[in-house]
Structure formats: C-alpha cells, structure tokens
Length: 151
Image 1 (cartoon, rainbow, N blue to C red):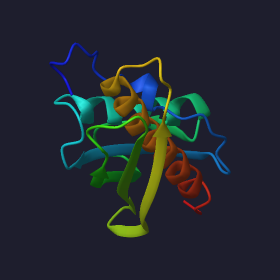
Image 2: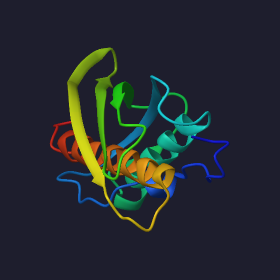
Image 3: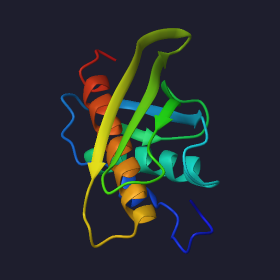
C-alpha cells in the first residue's frame, strides 16, 4: 500500500491496550515474520508493537534480543482483505509460539478480523485501518492468553 500517498503503519497503530493476568520476572525475546501484509517495513513495526505492549504493561521484566528466558514467535500465516469496496473487512491469522528454554509451552493460531466503513477516509486508508485493527486485536488476544501461562 505504499506509493499511494499513504503513510506507513507505525507500531503505535498496532500496539493494543490490555491488562496481563500475570507479570513475569523474566526476560523475553521476540521474533516476527510471515506473509507480506501491506508494506515493506511492516514487520519492524509489528515487533515494536509487541515490545511496546509488553513494556507498557510490565508483562515481562525485560525485552531483549539475546539470551532471554522466554521466546515468543509470531508468524502471520494469512491476511485476507478486499482491494475495493465501501466496507473493508480484514482478516488476519497469526500463529503464536512461546518457548521456555527448548520446550514449547504455548502454540496457538489466532484469527481476528476488523471492519472499516468510515466514508471520510480514502479507500486505501480504510483498508490499512481495517488491517491494523485486526492485527492489534490479535496481539491483544495472544498476549492476554500468554499472560495466563505459568512461566
């Protein structure tokens, strides 16, 4: 969607508000990848949104690149959305894996959707808003679920 006069997605548009069930005195590392969603730099912003959500809630003691106690991987498996229309429905599937050491302690695929119908926005802006809403909700559901684990 870049090149259409649109600004790129920023992590603040993807970072959800949520309250974790548990907070952990452990470090966590994050890895994000998957299918091409909308723009080149998207996965950097996706990872920053995860870092932001974890840090602002204090879910983990620290987010680090190396030698973490817990590893969270998020893989965008599928992204479906229309290219035209008055209403934009985006559906996103993200596979989440949490490892503690070498053991997988959580594995779940979460599908979320978001609809954007505001008539004042350009079609491309409505599409981006719908995609971001689906991803934000997916992150919220996954981190809330992960916060229920006994880590």
